Image (cartoon, rainbow, N blue to C red; front, side):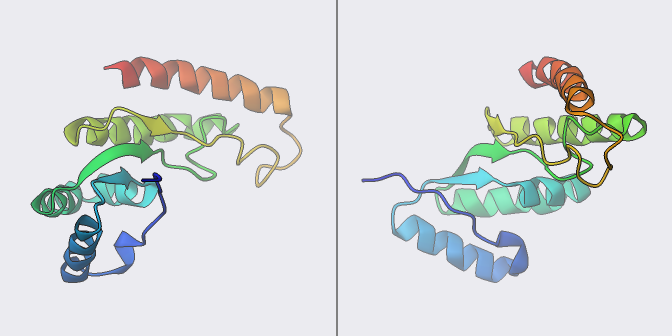
Length: 145
C-alpha cells in the first residue's frame, strides 16, 4: 500500500455529512487524519466543535496522526510586527494544547510566508530570520511540554 495524504474540506460540510465521509474513509482503510490548520483554528474558537469532531472520528476508528500549524500573515513565527507577537505565540501554544488533548505529537510549520509580503520593504530577511528564531525558541520550549 502506498501512503497518501490529502486535504479534505471538513469545515465546509455539516456534521452528518462529515460522519458519512469519515465512514467512507474508514471503509477504504483510512486510519489517520491530519489535524489541519482549519480544524485547529475551529478548535481554538470552539473547543466543543473539535472535541465532537474527534469523538466522531473515534466512532469510525480514525485518529489524528499529526498536525499542521496555524499559518498566514499573523501566524508566521517570523512575523516582523512585534506588537502582534504575543498573540501569534498564544495561538500556537493553544494549538499545542489541542494537539496534546488529541494525542498528536508532531506539527508541521511552513515559515517564510510573511517575509517582505504585506509588511513592506522596511523589513529585511535578517529581521524576519531574527524574529523566526526568537519565536521558535519560545515555541519549542512550550511544545516539549
